[in-house]
Length: 340
Image (cartoon, rainbow, N blue to C red; front, side):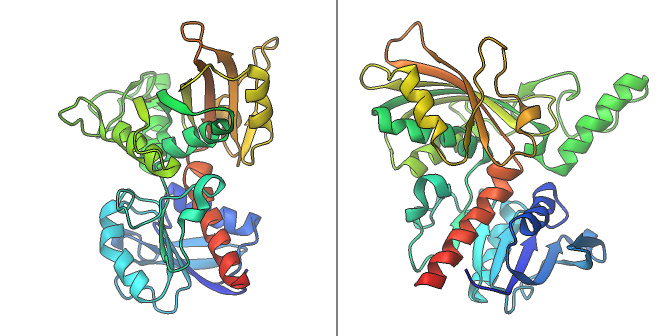
């Protein structure tokens, strides 16, 4: 891998931005020069990396001169505005927003699944939706056992998916309810604490919300299965961090044995099986929080369909669902460039 890189983080003050800093340290990402960029209101704030205090600056079109790698996690509109400038400056760009995911010319990548989608000339790589990443980390390995015909998915998505502001809202509302004080102002149409609700994204004419449509489209693109049947219901739950999903996989033929399913998942990078029936111990968002691996359990046959198996999965939305996936992409591309 290249040594001594100039690295920029756009969205440095957000929850994912802070995870980038932690991961750079833990994974010894070769940072020589660090540029922390955010909105104008964050200008002048500071953040610490490896004991050094860095000043946060407003992200502008001229912020990327001599930057080797730029990680974006500041929303789709900011990515659409600034990514072209980072690319023009010569940076490798890894974008966590939805801005470029649907573009057929831009790779949408989970490194354990489709790293080969990144061509030698690609300088922009999109990170998939967090729910799609967590889902496919468990689904993709099972393609070894048969052809998948349909996915039925329900998500239980934490506040971290809405960023640091959503996490604070859940904490503040919970505190207010416990203390019996007035609830804080909220952008949501319903109370968050002690509640759950349909994912807070716009609903189209089909009745599906934007999050559900993302999971459907992105799953097909990542797996290179444009005709894959996918049905998704996305729900926001009062959990601070890490998403959980329940999944039914229908195969074209009879479902594989549970022994084969467990064996394949146990040998899959980035996956950890948590499936203790006797102890009623299965994946939880609490256990998944702070973990690089996606947790998979409740593995069982669908008693209503001999072609299907069911399981649940939990994964840290801020890590494998966002920052970790992005860093893994950059590490892999840089390593390939060093060899090439």
